[in-house]
Length: 189
Image (tube, rainbow, N blue to C red; front, side, top):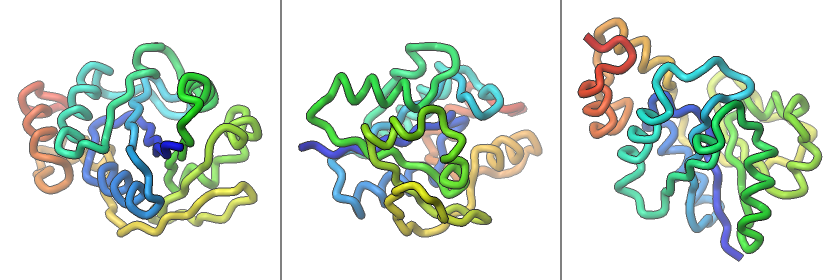
């Protein structure tokens, strides 16, 4: 059975932290691929700062150099708010020969009791929790823990640096930085 990791998020913009998490989880759990699923509108966060089209383009560029990383646009195509349950149920039904591993940060592990239809989710996929600064990985739910090198970079940090006209070099792939500059995203002057 094929084993695929799922990394969802707004990817606004995608950065090296996303890529590091995906690579480490893939290697440590022996997964075949990692599917990046950008959300159109996440249920638990504010709207993305850049358009879905721009976020997809940035993500395509960010993962282009790794043939085991794939872009899946199911949530963008569906529009509106997407619950993980709806997405994973659809993937589970569409790909019955794939075992899915849903990757979440430690902040989301603490939030698991509040997830929409969490008990049903646990029947169709496995959760993988990765470390995040300032959060514990204590939970009553079955979560595979993957220890990854800590890299304290976030999309928020990158957007703030761009707005303040500060360098974002080495925080995200150069191809993504070039796209941001070319499109003048996030208040780029």
